[in-house]
Length: 326
Image (cartoon, rainbow, N blue to C red; front, side, top):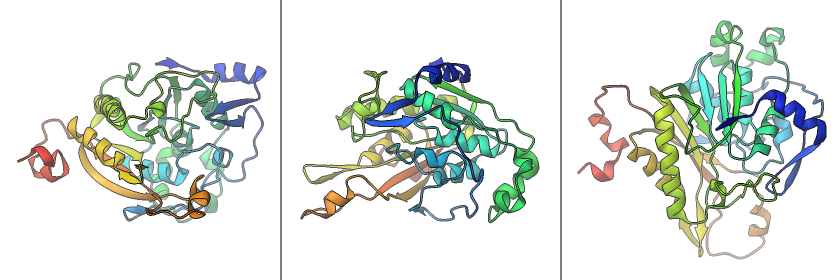
């Protein structure tokens, strides 16, 4: 891991007006207009089916609509509010355009972002380049329908979040010590569906999004799981959003195999949330042709818990490695 500082971002934008992620050119270095720092109509999710047809556009999130595969800010916000408190440390080890850390900045959490593509780090710094003071917001903007935020008001107004961004590999988080993180919230690439360093000036051979072999991908994600387990504090949570694919017109359950990899390193499965997908690039062409299979229009948001030290987990055997418990 190598830290990429905000000062490096400022130097970068002196000579660059955009970055390229996959095959998309994204502008950077402009002064952005922010109409709302907090969502007006946000309500915390209460079930295990999440659907966000309209991607959140508060703060600088509206700038990331063209970044393929990034999760909606509503996902990050729900996870942060549910599984952390003001002043906690949140890690996104597949940072992308910085959605999770934007929410950390807005909600008073310290954020650590890691991505293997330096251009993604530059983009994330660009989206994080805004000043934010919660106590200057109107009560209607900040607290409408957001009971959990209202309860934390006195806490997160006192927290000045620190943000650290690193170019690095989620399989080797060597700049993060053991048990330093309160929450991991991330959305890794999978099955070479989107190659995030394609056409990038800073291509890397270690990009997990380039792995087409399912066996190899799951094996590498097991290494990620081990690192997540190491850096996460006991009793805390790791949330991973991942989907599935089809090959030869048959379903390939990537998500469940990754889930098993996380359980194998010691995590307990807390939740399996179904996140519906909207506005997918391939949806319209798919609808226009006859097929003998259904369009995959969901992803799995697995929430894992790391056991407390000395915790007896036998009562959770159906939520751990059940296939090896007999």
